[in-house]
Image: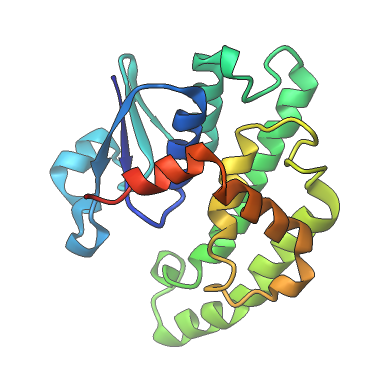
Length: 207
C-alpha cells in the first residue's frame, strides 16, 4: 500500500486529493511541524529534504508535488486524471503544475519561511510585505491566462485541479485581493464540493 507523508494545511493536500480521485488505497503518516518532526532522523531517512509530501511506493520514495501527481495519474490511467495519450497536452499540464510549484508556492512561502532565503529579521518583514503582491501576480496570471475552463485544462478535470485548489486555500491569509480572481474562487468553491476533496480533508487530520 502507498504511504503519503503529509502535514495538514500544506501542499501535501493536493496529493491526497489525487489519490482519492484515482481510487488508490493509501495510508497517511503525519509529520508534525510544531514538533520539528520534519527534521527527525526517521523522516529524513524517508525524505532527506525534510519536507512534505513524500509518497512511499513499492519501488521507492517520490517527492515533489508535480512528480507525485504525475505518478498517481500514470499509476491509475483509467481514472483519466491526465492526458497520458497526448504528449503535448501532458507537457502543458506539467507546465502548469511546475509554475504553481516553482513560482506561486515559493512566493507564498516567503510569508512564513523567510529563513530559507535570509538571516536578518528586517529581511523577513520585507518578504512578508511583498507576499500579497507576488502571490497575487501569480494567481492573476492563472486567472487571466492559464485557467482554461471550469477546470484548469478546460472541460476535463485533471491532477492540476487539486494543486490549484490547495494553493488557492491560502489566498486570504496571504493578503491577496480575491475580488480580482472570480474564476479562481469559482474553481475553489466547486472543488470543495467534490467527494475526493471532502475525503482528503477529513483524513489529513487525526480523529
